[in-house]
Length: 327
Image: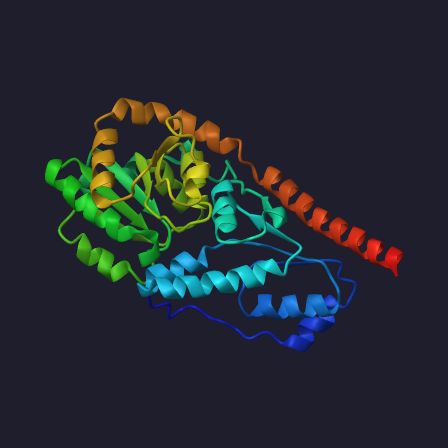
């Protein structure tokens, strides 16, 4: 993909070292980029505990974007090395933890720390029939995708599935919210179909898009969690996600949405056709989606992260005390 707007600044090593030396007790690294590498090196030199969060499945991204599995394996080796130097690693879902263990990560260092959603910012109350009527000629059913429009999100499968779906029925539209390097190709793949490209939406505008759809479709098999799936459910919109990756851990199958075993174009098309033929059930699941998302609060996520970092700090203190006792 072409990420022309992506900036990769090079950190000032001296400035990082001076900042961490000013009474810092623990370093939490968010990404394995230049800043993460510098922070790791400085923290180790200062003998500070280091933990981090495994946000993104970079190995799968590398393989998907290049079409070369070897690049994925190279990225996987780097991730094992980078996160293997940490005291503890936070992962967003049980599925991600299982995948990392299969990739050779130390299970004793992995902790599942979920994420929450603000259910006041995303709510069924934002449903907007006027907005909905403006999509795709006001078709009866409206599918929604929100996220980066990029190859690794499996959007090619969505485009192919939707084209096939349109051969069976003419009452369904698709709304794409987001931008990215696959946008032009996505437009080409869906040319002539009832697809509305809404661009980037934020705040209350985004909330209206979520709440005004009938079914949120997230075909990605490379995401470690799926915040957008939680936001959609908080908005009262049932979701359809893949059984591969972290988003399935965000869904109560059969109550707030569905988990599809095979996210292929044919399987996705069949599943969409099936669910759209049950409009009563779709409507009834709006309440279940809202209830399920409401249990995943930002407060609970914060407490989990706080406990995680405290555990890393206390674990390092015990190790330090043990070394001193043996000296």
